[in-house]
Length: 91
Image (cartoon, rainbow, N blue to C red; front, side):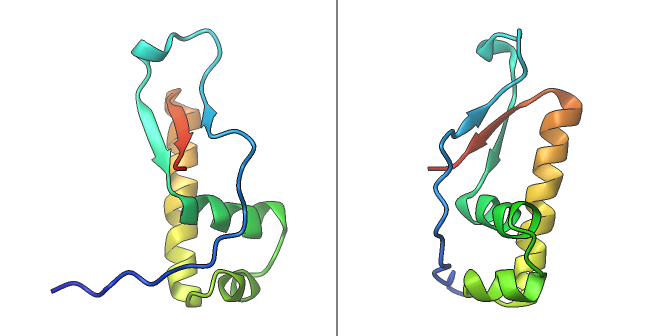
């Protein structure tokens, strides 16, 4: 039996939820999906410049869980940019 997923505190709602390479039709693109938690982690750490401990407190999660979410988000974003995939932010 898996542990129940805790409710994370998410405050950020992006203005756009889809990014894709210019000049490539949608039907030719693979999608990478960024979860709400991953988007929040990227915003708090990379955009707002918070330390992991402070960012994890804002998300009401442990620092190790925050690190896991952040690493997952960064891998997905890098994959999208390097391989020319569309990036969809979960609504």
